[in-house]
Picture (tube, rainbow, N blue to C red):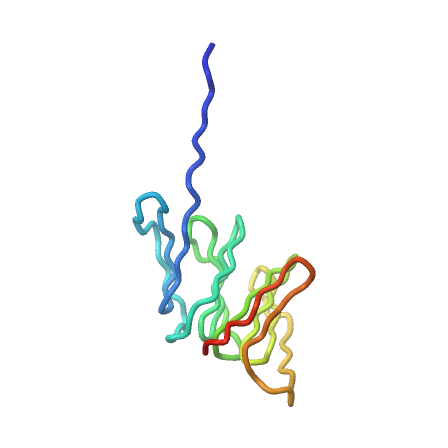
Length: 139
């Protein structure tokens, strides 16, 4: 009687810094792919990863890559510059920077932007029940 065995491949590790996103083999450390973001700057990149996509928010843009291949699906400019907080809820990606919140579809279409005029600016925490992203105090 033969025994059927499968070995699941290790998931691709994603790293992002200085406007670059990398897919890394977690077993060997080898870079599998890389993508240079538009509008990256020197601010940290916020990552949100699902089984199908990688969302990466840089200084002035949001990039969506196919997970695990790194294929570019879309890239859009954000209305506000700065370090981002990301929340994906259903078919909407919420991006918060400097006291402002923008909403994009999962295909990259800009849906709305709230400036919270007169309320001040700073890091933004976002969330819905069971899905919360805390603000990062570093600028």
